[in-house]
Image 1 (tube, one colour):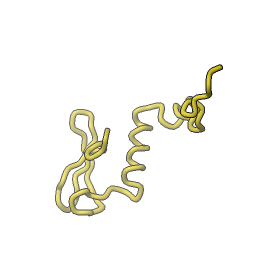
Image 2 (cartoon, one colour):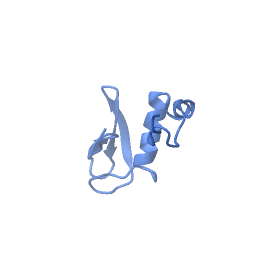
Image 3 (cartoon, one colour):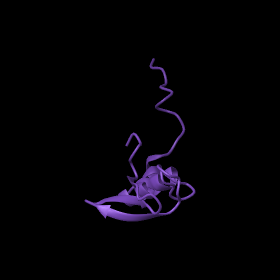
Image 4 (tube, one colour):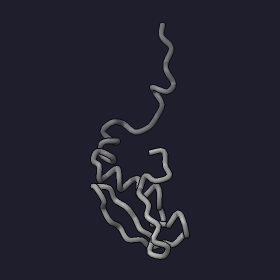
Length: 79
């Protein structure tokens, strides 16, 4: 008789719920932005709260309005 794998049967998101919330690149990006900066953008260098957004090679970047430091959504993360 096989034992039940606790990891396999843990509670969490179902596949339909996951696809509903994160099914597109835009949905994933929006969720990541909300998780990284829940109160809005904060510059990792100076702590200023305003930035300009721009795209470079299809990737979004933020440039701090105070110190002009540029960062991406994934910079400094395991992504």
